[in-house]
Amino acid sequence: MKIGRGLMTLEFRVQHDVATDAAPASRTAPRGRVRRVIDHLAARRTAAQLRRLDADLAELADLQRVLSEARTVVDRGWIQHAWFAYLDDRGRTRTASSAAATEVAGRPLVGACLVGAVVDAAGGPHAVHSQPVQRSLDLVWHALAAAEGSPVTWCPAPDIRMGRVRDLTRWNDSAGRTAEQVSGLLLTAERVALQESGRVAERASALRAHSGGVPVLG
Image (cartoon, rainbow, N blue to C red; front, side, top):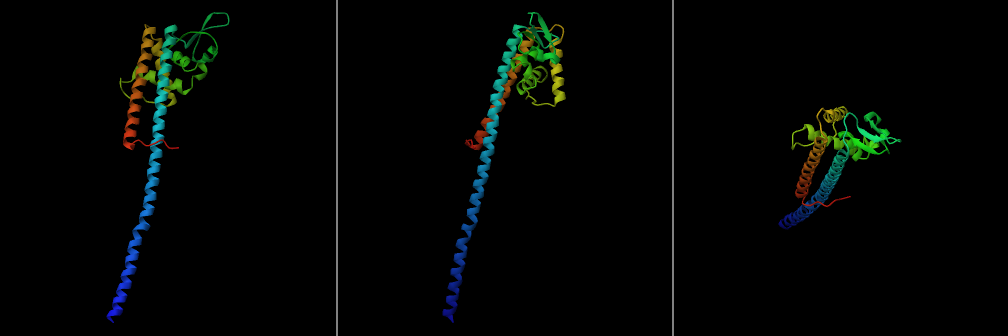
């Protein structure tokens, strides 16, 4: 009887030990795969965020170029109460408002207001609704109306954006306004773009540091 009980006890222990040893392996493998999937998805998200930030930096550099060229346009010839001054087929100077801006396309430009200078620098009248024009004007309005050093509000509602364009037009057409003041406002807008670039670069640097240098994934 003792031998029987001993054999039974030994058999029970062997079965128990085998089951106990096998259990961790069956639980650990799925956890490892899940962890790898989570890490991979996190790396993809981080890489996508970094690509967006890099694209923002490239865009801000382009906007600075547009604003600098707009200053050159103003320095060549600045006007009030119209967007553009151009030469017609007979060499006479004509003016065009925003409604007739497309008439300027392909004609020699001899002057522009604040908004017209930005439009011309960003590609001309056909590009008036393009993102470079709209975002450049966002920067100019911010330089005029917002507190210095505050973040720029991008992509306002269409009616708000149109109101801001009217603000810039009224400012340009105010009595006593000078070309030097208009050029100075554009220069301030360039500084605003530079400040925004600094903010974006800081976010990108912090993200890279937090991720430990996550590689860009496809």
